[in-house]
Length: 206
Image (cartoon, rainbow, N blue to C red; front, side, top):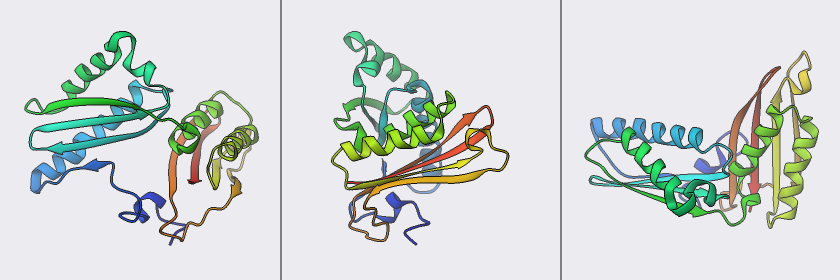
């Protein structure tokens, strides 16, 4: 079970919680789920390569709070907060008009403990044709230098342009996927290379 299911969802509510915090019934539930997805996609597209580790969305009545955790807050906030203000104005065009939006940008102090930050850099490197083994070693080295107890990276696809797709993995330390109390963070994404897509998965045991 621990090998198949998403490690974060598997550990709710032991030591993890949902990134969207709200409750709704009927049509509103469907509407909120769709709106949350639009918000996350827009932020990830607009703020690409800014080291976003997580996006939390909270709702209460007509109040909406979006919290962005990032390794590079200065790139988002901008000089005098102009960047954050522009982002808020763009987000207000996506959300419902009767919702009051609050935007918060918080610095991720240790980006090497965030699989999302490492994933973003790994995908960028693969798309720039950096050899996949070098990308994997770089991720593992950063995990080892951090305070993490262990980690793993898995790549799957036409690695370095080989004709038959295959899977490669690299690990370090411990990774108890079946232990529910273990604080394991997980992220996955896709690198769009000239040879095709390459799936990237990263686990970090903190």
